[in-house]
Each structure stands twice: as C-alpha cells, then as structure tokens.
Length: 217
Length: 260
Image 1 (cartoon, helix red, strand yellow):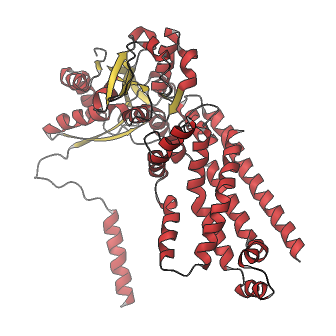
Image 2 (tube, rainbow over the protein chains, first blue to last red):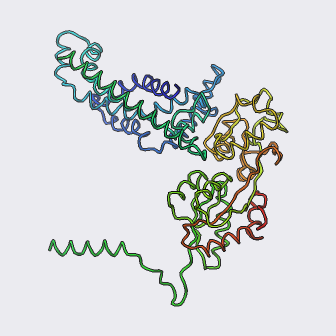
Image 3 (cartoon, rainbow over the protein chains, first blue to last red):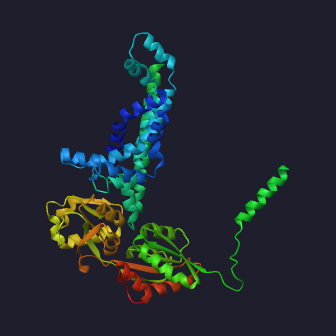
C-alpha cells in the first residue's frame, strides 16, 4: 500500500547519503563539521510546513530542480509519489544521520587501525570493519526514519498534495477523514494500521539485531 | 535564609495565579467578552466586525479560526465558545443534534464558487468545458471532505466534466492551499470561493459556477449552549446579520445571508 512503499523508499533513498554523512560527522576533524551538522538537523527544528514550502520552491515547477527535471524528462516531481518519498526522506534524514553518527563514534578506532596495519585499504576497512560494527545505529536510524514517515503530514501535503492513489498517505487520509462528519471510524482504522506498521518495523529491527549479535558472538 | 526565599517564591506564584479584576475608572463595567469560533474563510470578515463592534467599548471579541470540523469537535469537547460560525451546514447540524447549541442556527452569509488561474498564466478557459483543454495539466482542488472540495466536485459533476478532468486533480489541504498553489503558478487552475479570489492579487478569475450547480454555500451561525456571555453574543449575532455587518460582508465579496 502507498504509505508502506513511501516509507520503505524514503529509507532506501536516505541510506547511502545517511551513512556517508553520519560517518563524516563522526570522524571528520574540521570546524566546518558544526555547519554541516546544523544543516542536517534543520528539518528537525523547522516546522514541517516550512520544510514543505522550501522543498516546493526547489522541486516545484518554478524551482531549479523541478524545472530541470521537467525539461529533461517532461515529467514533474511535485505532486507525485516521488514527492512523498522526498518529503519523508528529508524530514527523517536528521534522525538517520544522528543515529549513525553516534554508532560510528562508538566503533573502537583501534580496530580500524588494526585493519589498516593488516593491509586493508581505507575503503575496505570502512566496508568490513566500521560498517558492520555500526549496524545497530544504521538499523535503528532506519526504523526511526520509517516510523517518522508514517506520521509525516505537513511537508508531504505541500510538496505532494492530496491525490488519491498517488500521494494520499495514511496521515493525509486521516486528515481527510477528520474533516468528514462521520469520519471517526475511518480515523481509528488508520490509527490501528499505523501502530501495527510501526510495531512490525520495530520487531523486524529487533529480530535483525539479535541475529547479528548471535553471528558476531 | 532558605526558608525566606521559599516563602517569597510561594507568594509570587500564588500572586501570579490569582486573577486581578479589571480595575478601570470607578463605576465603569469591564468589557464583556464574546468568544467566537469561525471558519477560516471568514477571517477577514470577522476581523472587520470585531473592529466595528468593539468601538463602543462595551464588548471585546476574541476570535479563533480554523476548519469547521476542528472547531466543531473542540466545542463538543467543551471548548469555551459563545458564537460559532461554520462554513457548512453539516457540522452545525451535528452540533445541534448533540445539543450543543442554544437556539436555531441562522445563515449569515453565502458565497460563490469560482475557477481561478495564475495572473500571468496562459489559461483562457471561459467556462467549465474549457477545463478539458489539453494544456491544463494541474487543477488544484480542495480535499473531498472539505466543504470547498465538495462544492467543486458537485459543480463539475453537474456540468458533466468531472470524470474527464479528475485525472488532473491536485488535491490540497483546504481552499486557502488551493489559492496559494494557483497564485504561485504550481497549478494551472483551481477552484476557490469568490472571496478568496478577491483577496489575492496573484490570481485572476476565469469563470463562476452557477449557484444551481452545487449545494448552497452557506455560513450558518449559532450561539453555543455552554456560553458564558449569551446576551453579548446575541448582540454580536444581531450586528452580523444586521445592515452594517452584512455591508462589511459584501465588501469582502460574500453574498448576503438570510434575513433574521
């Protein structure tokens, strides 16, 4: 169903940049680090509606990325399912990055150094040592991003609108149902589905983590 | 020393929690407060009424704006309100069924549904059938459960174009979001109230929907049972449905309501 797809895609789309930036914020020694961290955290402190308007200015018809996309492919970004994914990914990004950053900080640097002295290159060390050891943070951050997308309303409705079948995610459907005089029943159904999805994601994450622990033990 | 500080703190907190009655010039009564819950589309009109009504110094109007659905739910849950003005009859009917109203609602304003386009756009549709033209890819319309969205869908169905153009619908949160998405050029055209079209310099009106093509767009107003200042609220309602209040409405683009 749409909400599930949007949630999963928003995590998938954020993973690589999230891991890179999370690692960067943990290991990079530079005064610019604070600036990057501030920018990453922005969607967390801005009201979602403001984030939505900023995204619309970029991805909308009149925005740089939106106009370029329309010129190249003839299609549009705003008011499509892709827009839902973008909104959810942007809004959940700070949660993912912060979780990964803390996880990478917890990886013992000596293990990385040992790997280097044993002959593995920088990237190889990152792939075979740092990444597996920071998996708890990556998984935890992904679950948070997914859960956040289940509740994402403000930015989504501005960038993606409320189009049945294409962009009407559960939070937007709840909003629509609340406007109907007899919508209470529908609202409770949506709430139940949201809670069930969140719990399922959490349990999956738990199961994966304990499997990982047993593997490393 | 510590005990003294604690005592001082306690006195300050108690003093802050106590309400000091309005002490104006001796002999003059404090202005009676009327709390109004009104649909967002009436924001400008209510502020006009508030300015005029408060001139006598007898009353003070405190207005809250929002979607009729949210406001109605708040009233049902005990929110303090003296006068409720909704943007559709169904929420007023719900409140009436639940016994939350004092007396019968009366229609204090009506509105017209129009189609607008961005001011500098190339859209030239002069009537509803012009919306089927190939260049019109994005039609902004309010959510189907919001009054503006309902009226628009009814009107389009009445004209027989609903199925043809619904693939181009870009649903928006409410009628104001429809207006702003057309005003900024993201959508080629949109369906809003005449009052919204009038309030924005960045849109131009393409055409109006005939009043017969949809359910009447009415704004019913009623006094709330849980009111703490019924006489003052009654006075405000009389002002709104009187000649001055109605004139202010017409200035904003509304059609007059029913005679009291």
